[in-house]
Image (cartoon, rainbow, N blue to C red; front, top):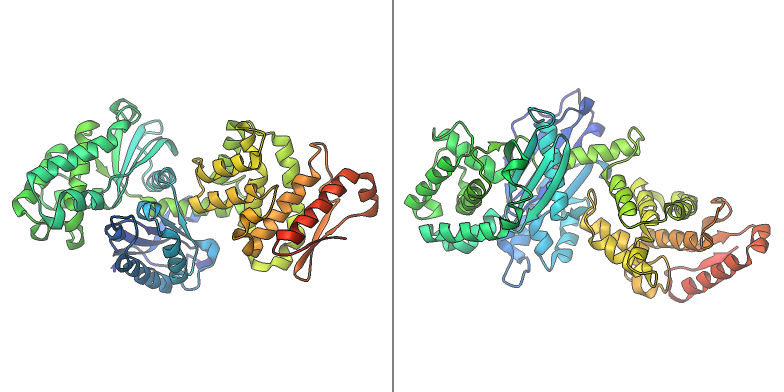
Amino acid sequence: MERGTEKREGPGTPHQALLAAIDMGSNSFRLEIGALPHERYRRVDYLKETVRLGAGLDSAGHLTEDAAQRGLACLRRFSQRLAGFEPGQVRAVATQTLREARNRNAFLLRAQDALGFPIEVITGREEARLIYAGVHHLQPPAEADAGRLVIDIGGRSTELILGQGRTPRVAESFAVGCVSLSMRFFPEGQITREGFRAAQVAAGAELEEALVPFGREHWTEALGSSGTAGAVSQLLLASGVTDGRITPTGLRWCIERCLEAGHVERIALPGLKPERRAVLPGGLAILYTLATHFDITALQPAKGALRQGVIVDLHERRQALLRRRPGDMRDESVAALQQRFGVDTGQAARVASVALALFDGVREALGERADDDSRRELAWACALHEIGQMVSHHDHHRHSAYLLSYVDAAGFSQSQQRRLGDLVLGQRGGLRKLELQLAQPLFAWQVLCLRLAVIKCHARGPVNPAALRLAMHGDDAALHLPPAWAETHPRTLYLLQEEAAAWARQGPFKLLLA
């Protein structure tokens, strides 16, 4: 296990101020612990293990048991370092290998048990956004208005981000990385000139669609983030070829040294760590393709990477919860989706006011499960429960669920988006379609609050969020209806009685109308 050498936790960093990020990459797993006193990033600890998870995908797209065991053993060691951390202080993200793995859900259950914290599989674009956040925070641009190209070559994917200041304008992920390319074109570690040519053609074919949006006219500096760029920069510096900048000439020099070695195990270059040898040829092929196709004369090594971006993002989420900021990136994404899909924001706000009032009535009884993020999930589901009406009014809840599960939404992980999709799918209709999800008590109560709010707001007019009160009655739910309200709202009362019948037939608990 590689440990960072920067300053460890000291008296000036209270434990509750620490934040931790776990980056479950295709080549390496990394644990970074940091803090942001006065918005300035400070590393406290850093652990890294070469796990080669990406090399463990078989021909059917399943993660092998050997690869899974390597990952689980690493996460158990990370768990020891995270002893004493609260859930809100830790965020673990998984990238391309687990985006691809067909048996990822089974692995994630074991992985979360080993780590002791939830693990999110993030989309390629979300990965790119977080990479840019890490680079920007640790390495501000020389000029505020300068365009910047950030490149991150991982084990099975490459992220390109074009940004200005702290804002990523274009962010894309491409399914080509140093592990996948090395395995395919340098089998059993054999290095040939033909292998390099074929690897560069394959990389070029994958990256070709990026030539226009990431063209040379859009940026003034190029930065290489994370392992591959850092490793090549170090070996060029240690060999005296460049001052650490990655240039086309320097890359050609590296490729020739690899060809002379003939096999990855015989590569002996100053500054190159042994665990990097196996994936160096694939990484060099991608770097050289990028340099020649995108006219990159000098790629500077970047200070930040995905793990720092995760910590910066986690810090911003905590600040939003403390109301020191209006909201985090997820709130911005929700507002953008409302505008994009023409949501009736007045109706969304009415549904949210009722659903959250109902949820607050049972939060204490639900205990730790009903944390601030679960309340915000319910609010986001209310804000977006009608986005499917842009597709069709008929069965719009199904269209809403599909869109929420698969649309690009910065700040959200794939798993959180699908949870939101399941929530809005459950806003109406039978409950059997969510039978497995409803086995989770917190999810069942969130669905109930959303369904009741949609019923109460069905007339799309002004509502009193405090008119109805939800409470736990043993294992069941009790909805308290003031007699005067019930008498003046017969149509809503009828719909609530139908809802109680639906929960009696198919719900995990009963809905009692008191």
